[in-house]
Image (tube, rainbow, N blue to C red; front, side, top):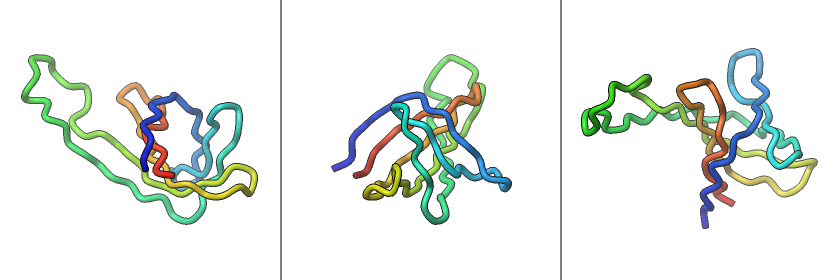
Length: 90
């Protein structure tokens, strides 16, 4: 069952710009395999504010902490460039 996390994390990027690892709760989680970039459009027209970004950048990836069992996660890059661990899919 997926768990919503919404915690700010530090992300280490590969040379091609894909996430290679992230630091969550003091532990490094290494990305396994190829992460998948997903862009979602939120209904900005339903608010009165002018958006800074129209699409939300989301990365679905599998990662493991120090060789432990791998989990699937969603990482989100916010408009200010910060990274958020959005979901732990288990």
